[in-house]
Image 1: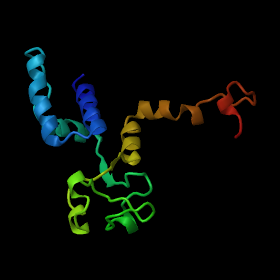
Image 2: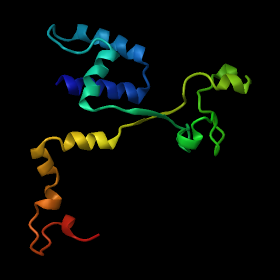
Image 3: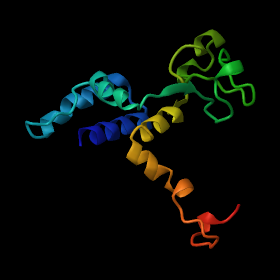
Length: 155
């Protein structure tokens, strides 16, 4: 129950772009609304300590606000998108005529959260019984030449 609650809260944090500090403030307020015996973490740091051992680690990748590119590999050092010319960083309204040097500082306009699939597969297949259930479609089906389900047909 605790894991699902923390995961739901972290998903809301990611969806709306809350800062770590604002999320920690929320986690300090919410327990006052719950019963005395709640075990909700009191800060974002404690919430991460619950999630990371479960294999829910992530990588943050900077992206173009117009979804043109990901700022990785050959684009990692760029500050503007080579296709649309939009800045990698948020630009304040009052700084529109500021130098290009100032636009390289500040908040990122868009960040992609990449959840590595390999770690997820390792966790899924760690238990032998679960691995058998997960591979049943490939290994455990009755192969009598009949077509009992559309999944058995060739592409």
